[in-house]
Structures are given as structure tokens and as C-alpha cells.
Length: 108
Figure (tube, rainbow, N blue to C red):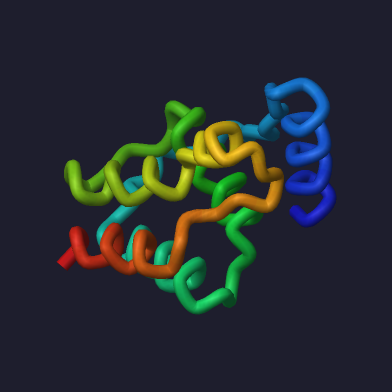
């Protein structure tokens, strides 16, 4: 997966359009627990934001994923949204820990 994330980031940086590898699979329901684990991993630094952002992009762009509820959808879209890179003009942009914790709190 590291190679996919690196290729995605390089393409995004060079062209402002990244290529996400999406495979077909059975319908999968993203639950609050799953979304919570993703956000916690980002908040604690266990998962680099670029990798979490790539995973969230894959979930959002794949028709085989569904969200348990709106809070789960919003949490995944929070991780998927990296528009701050363009606003700040920083390739290494990531949401702050406080922003991530606020998004995490919406799952409670």
C-alpha cells in the first residue's frame, strides 16, 4: 500500500489529480467503530495522514462501501478531504490534532 500512496501523492502533487486503485469486492458497511479506529489512528499518529487520506479516498470512490449512518459518512469524508493542501499551498498539510479529535467526537 505504501507504493500506492506514494504514487497517488506524486500524481496529486504533479497534476492536482491523483489516481486511486479501487478493487471490486462485496458490499461492505463502514461502521462507527471502523471510522473511529481510522480517526484515532490519525489523531495518535499511528497512521500517517497521507495513508489515511488514501484509504478514505478509496472508500468514498468505491460503490462497494456504504456508511452505517451520516456520522460515519462525515468522519470518512473528513479524512478524505485534503483540500487544505491547496488552500494552504502545503504538500505536507494535514488536519490538526484538535480538528481530528473534534471529528472523532461526532462519532460518540
